[in-house]
Length: 579
Image (cartoon, rainbow, N blue to C red; front, side, top):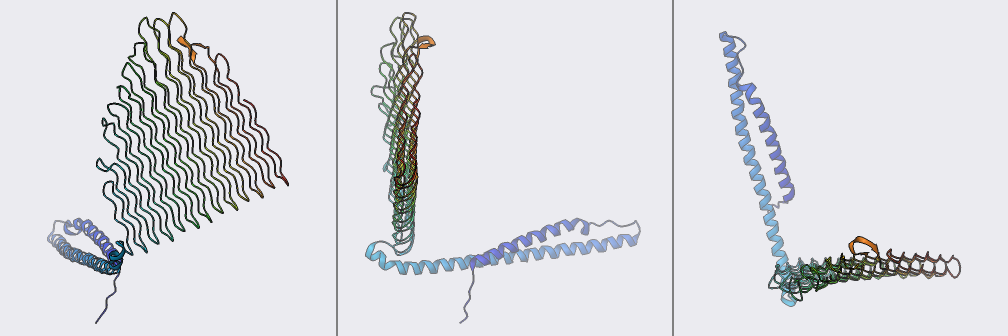
C-alpha cells in the first residue's frame, strides 16, 4: 500500500500562485492581440496584402491556442484547489474523530473534555470550561432583558486562558431599571495561563422616578502558577432621574477588581473604573440630587515570586443635581452627587513593584435655582464631595518599589442662586475635595511610592441678582490633604515624597456679578514624607494647598513634615511649604 503525505496549506498556496501566473499570461496575450491580428499591409500591392494576411492568420491562431491554454490552466488550478480542500477536510475529520475518542471517557466521568476550548455562553449564560489538559475557557454571554447579568467566563484546565466575562445588559430608556452586572472572567490554567478579563456593567436607565443604578463590573479572573490576572470590568453610569417626585439620579456602578497574578509569576490585573452618577431630575416643585459615582476596583496582587501589582481603577464622577427651573422661588437647586473613591492598588509578591492607586472621582455640580417676580430667590445646589483616592500597592518583600497613591477627586462647583426682582438667591457652596492616596511601602530594597495630591475644593456659586438686597455667593469648598509618602526599603531605598494639598475653592461672587462677600475654601495640608530604613533619604513633605480667593481668602494648608533618613545613612526629607 502506498502512503501519500501532503501539506494542505502548501497545496493551497501553490494553487494561488498558479492562478496569479494565469492572470499574467492572459494579460500579456490580450496586449498582443491588437498588433498581431490586425497588422496593416505595407503597401497597396498584392504581395504586401498577402504578407499582412499571413501575419494576421498566425496571430489569430496564437490567440486561439492561448485561449485553450488558459482554459486548461484554469481547470488545473480548480483541480488543485479542490485537492487542497479535500486534504483539509480529511485532516479535520480524522482529528475530530481522534479528539472525540480521547475526550469521550473524560466527558463520561467529569462532563468535561480533556482537550479543547470551552463553548461560548448564550445571553447571560456562563461560558464552558476548557479541557482538563489543554483549552481556553469560553466567553460568557452578554446580558439581555431576560438575563440582565453577563455570564461568567469559563475556567481553563491545566494549560489555557480563562474566558472573558459577558457585559451586563443596558435596559431601554424609560424603564428605570438597573443595569446588569458584568460577568467575572474565568480563571487561567492551573499550570500556565492568564485569567480572563471581566465584563463591563450595563448602564442604568431613566424611568418615571429615580434613575436606575449602573451595573457593577465583574471580577477579573485569577491565574494559576504562571500567568497574569485578568482586568476587572468597568462600572457603568447610573440613569438620569426623571422630572418627577423623587427623581434622583442613579448611582454609578462599582468597578470590578483585577485578578491576581500566578502564584509563582505574573502581574495582577488592573481594576475597573467606577461609573458616573446620573443627573437629578426636577418637577418644578422639587429638585432631586445627582447620583453618586461608583468606586474604582482594586488592582490584583502580583505573583508570589515575580510580578507587579495591578493598577487600581478610578472612581466615577458624581452626577449633576437637578435644577429648579420652574420653582417660582420656592424650591432650591439640588446638590450634586459625591464622586466615587479610587480603588486600592495591588501589592507585589517577592520581587516586583506595587501598582498605582486609583484617582477619586470629581463631585457633581449643584443644580441651578429659579425665582419668580416679587419672591425671594432660592439657593443654588451645593457641589458634591470629591472621592478619596486609593493607596499605592506595596513593593516586593525582597525587591521592588511601592506604587504611587492616586489623586483625590475635586469638589463639585456650587450652582448660581436664582435671579428675581426682589432678593436674589444665595449661591450653592462648593463641594469638599477628596484626599490623596498614600504611597505604597517598599520591602527590603526599593523606593517608597509618592503620595497622591489632594483634590481641589469646588468653587462656590454666584449669588442671584435682586435689586432689593444683594445676595451672597456660595462658600468655596475646602481642598483635601495630600497622601503620605511610602516608606523606603528596610535595608536600602529612598522614601517617597508626600502629596501636595489641594487648593481651596473660590468663594462665589455676590448677586449681579459683584465682588465676593464670602470666604474661599481652606487649602489642604501636604502629606508627610515617608521614612527610610537603614540606608536612604527620607521623603520630602508635600506642599500645602493655597486658600481659595473670595471676600476673605481661605486659610492655606500646612506643609507636610519630611520623613526621617536612614538609621545608618541618609538625610531626612524637607518640610513642605505652607500654602
